[in-house]
Length: 510
Image (tube, rainbow, N blue to C red):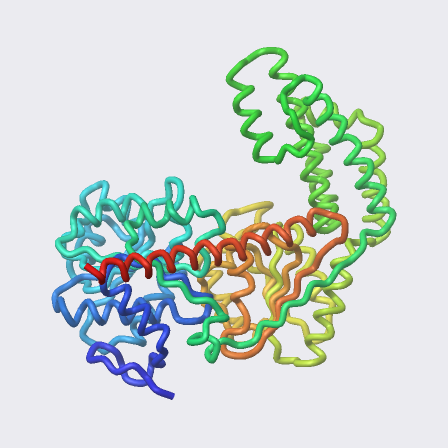
């Protein structure tokens, strides 16, 4: 194996790869968005661009940002392994006092921080970026809307005496408008994109076997679904009769925006429509839990609704069909019945652990109640050692601090646990140990999230991605939405890169 040789980089730590060299060359020449599949060395590319920058500007400072503190610490740890001694590397967080942060900025050669901290310190004058000659934006797909990255990039461009921007992501999104927004906000000149199918990448990519497993909702759950759909459709018809909406396929986000608009009108007609929208949103969420999650999740939600004092819920409670749906859900739950995905999951995990008792498995799910049910189910399986891995926000008394998250990941690496029952927090960036199997309890409609979930496996050895789908539910729609968005994203990026190459050729002719 050949390794990178550089006076700043420790020997034998970064493997030489031609696609990385190409990306480093592009990124050292101008502001670059580097799109690279998870596990193919975005951090290594960042380190090599840093080394290139330091070779030309010995006293340059570097700013490396990532969305969360665990990810910030992870990058610092990687850089400490990559670089020879002599560079001052410092992590700066909001927990440090302003005067301490100001001192750290002055002392450090490389600063690792979250964008929120950097934005605050730029606004209050604690930080000035004149001496920072490279600014790295990790998980750059976040740079849309009002996210801090855009503000920082703009200030950096004006303050730095010699600015250079490197943006890193595994998946910038499937909408050309959003990709263009990222490019514009980060002042990107070039896109460096690689896929798992590129000839210079293939030899470093492990096979990720993808399997889709379908289950049927049992008749009793189908009956609950029919009750709830009847109520929802009746409300939608009323909104259409009122000329509030003109299509029965109006999405939840469209309804919520419409609700905000109606609230500004303050008319009796508008309040009636708002109430119908509130009822539709409530019923739709119950349907989502029934179709794609667990009966446990649905039961928890219905119990919460029973204690809800709003008029919309009070009206729903008086509906005969709603009462029938609640009664049937409670009966099934008391009988120990569950969503067929749970039993299928039990079967899959049992097979995986019988095949390899040392396997590492991540099960992704959208909702904490589902994660809780999965965790409790996994505990009953021979050789299974599951752990819940959720976000910081306290919900129903549960939440993990960043310190607790880091500890769980370390214990997962060491084998104290072999199944991570994870929420969205495990999708992005975190240094999760190589996993043998990633399971999507439900498909996600986002290409970004699909790519990030799948990227937790097949890094250094073959792995498998298993997606559970409930037939004739929104699971199917979400699955195909993500599939087409991912294909669209790759085409947009490839077209952008080809256009960029043509422009470079044209420039070269002059």
